[in-house]
Every structure is written in C-alpha cells, then in structure tokens.
Amino acid sequence: MVIDTDIISYFLRGNERIRDKFVIYKDELCSTTINYSELIYGLKKRDNKIYLPKVELMFENIKLYDFDKKSAKIFGELKANLSKNGTVVADMDLMIASICIANNELLITNNLKHFKKIDGLKIESWV
Image (cartoon, rainbow, N blue to C red; front, side, top):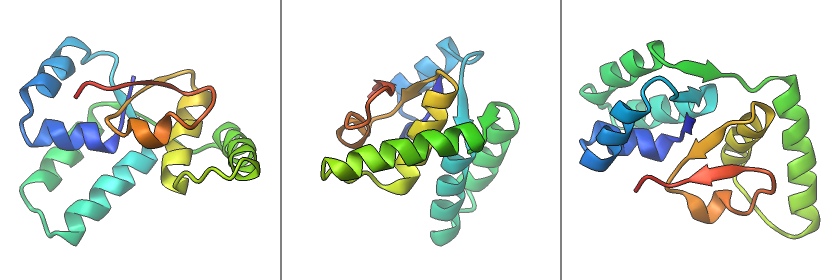
C-alpha cells in the first residue's frame, strides 16, 4: 500500500481515522521517493520544523519505491495515452501512479479526482 502525500499530511496533523489505518496496516505501508520529495519541499517552503523530523523518521521506517526504468516506461506510455485523449495529469502524480503500477501496489490517496484518470492504477481513499 503506497501512501500518498496527502494521506501522510492527514496523519501528521493527527487525523484519527488515518492514524487508526496506519496502525492496522503498519506492516504493509510504503511510499515513493516522489512523495518524499513533495513532503520535503512543502515543509522546507513553510520552514516547518515540527513536522520535518516526523517525516524523516517515517521515511526511515517504511519501504520506499524509486522511479526506476520500469516506472519510467509506464510513465511514458501513460502520459502519451492521456495526452492523446486530451487528459492532463500532473507529472508528479503520474510518476507516483507509474511506480504503483510497476510494483502492483494500491495507492492510498484522497486525490481521487486526478488519480482516477489513470488506467491500471488501483486507488483507495481513507478520508
């Protein structure tokens, strides 16, 4: 189960439903280097010294998927197909989706509007 940036944000802000899910699925949770970069960017931009150590600790203790060659190929194919249909998905979201598809992982996100446009991606919302 790949946890998306927004879900991690809900967790950090103390959302009880998300925290309960983290406890239930603690051994199955993972994320991507793309999500990590989004979180670091957001926290550094706001100079958030409270959540930064928590994010660092979280990402030291869960499996992280990289944007590898297989993910890159899927990204290119998805982006081409979406472009042909006139559908726009942000590159970072498409990279996260490509990593999930390449590794046969479910994406846990509240960003259903963007991710539901991507064929072959399994998504679930905990919010």
